[in-house]
Length: 192
Image (cartoon, rainbow, N blue to C red):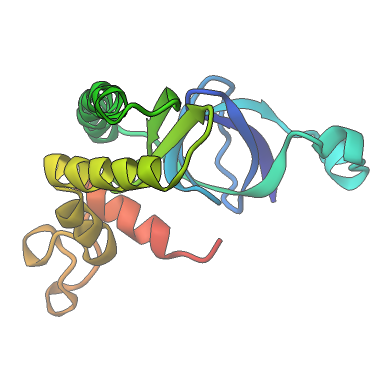
């Protein structure tokens, strides 16, 4: 099993991601991964040397979790979806900052990371984060979901696009690969 260090999010969180596929991934390549945070886009930073994998010490793994799986490379369709998520992420940042100011909160929003599933936002704050801030972020997450139609996207991830794209079992089953959502759905259904 090949392992890679993959960087995620605004703060460059590293996860050790494996892939059972013999497909090679190059440094700098964008990939879709399943991590403890969810399904997200990452950038391959390095291949982990098999010798290092066998002789792992706490020094080598201090900043690296060993809980990710590379699903596949990103496609053109994925990049279009990421652009849409980014547009709504920027709106979420501006809206959150305005809501915090209106509430008189001492919390300072550092960044918001949307995950590829279109329904998860990770908020990073500097300062105290109490129940009031949690309520604001819950409201923003619900608003974000409505804006990106993530429930529809999540359903597509779980079920595929339906009979029109080849997912119908009666029609031979399996997507032809032309639908990026079906490709993600199939990959997400595989165990980690």
